[in-house]
Length: 140
Image (tube, rainbow, N blue to C red):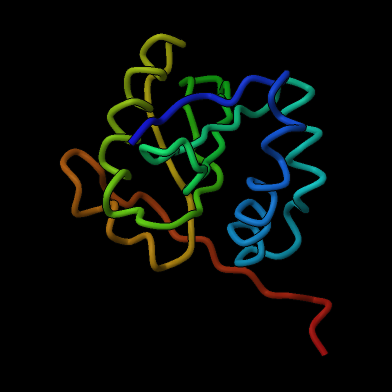
């Protein structure tokens, strides 16, 4: 597997493959972002798009990261993750993200996600710190 940042000058070429995965990731959390919002955040240097490529250089997964500066810490947040064969690459991706976070003077790496991502707490060094509950005022 090859895990790499997708440079902005390659975004338009890879977006048709990445966009459905981004849409899939954010569809589980309605009311935050559309894929067009993520595209703009990447173009505005707010988020970074990462690609996971197989040996034939086919895109099989994507994730985005954003660095959040708080008064007491700097955190690199894994904000969306989607794709196939994740068990083959997610641990490598986490190691790469840890190094990237250190290179960008972050104190923490964090992720938020649906309940299915509880598996992160089983990874060395990861622990849950809070849960988010949402009431949809637009529900019928």
